[in-house]
Image (cartoon, rainbow, N blue to C red; front, side, top):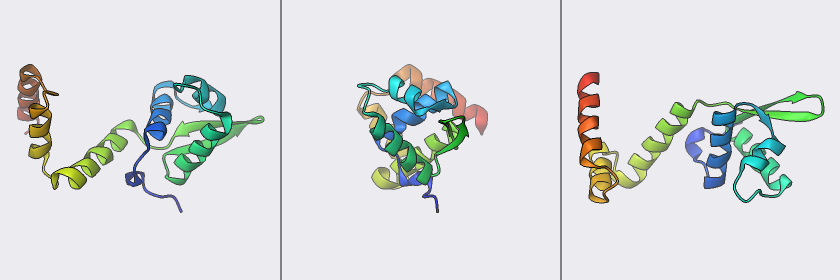
Length: 123
C-alpha cells in the first residue's frame, strides 16, 4: 500500500519531483542528468521506487525503458508540505509562520503588502 505524500520528501526526492513537474514524463537517465552532482544510476532508480511507494511517482514501460511521471500535482504537494510544517513547528498557526518569515527578513514590506491585497481579494 502506498504511503501518503505527507510522509514527507527528502531533499533529493524533492529535486526529482521538481524535475518531473518541470520536464514532464521522462526516463531515469534524463532525471539523473538533470540532478546536481549526477548521482549513481542505481541511486536514482532506488529513489524513484521510494517515490512510487509514497504515491508520488508512477511509471509506464515504453520499449525497454521505464518512463516516470509525477502522480501528484505540485500544488497538492506544496499544500501538504506547508501543512506539515505548520503542524510540526508552528502549532498549526499560519500567523506564527508569517511572523517567523518577517522576523527572519524572508518577506519584504512590499511582499507583505501584496499578501494583504491577495488575501483581501479571496475573502
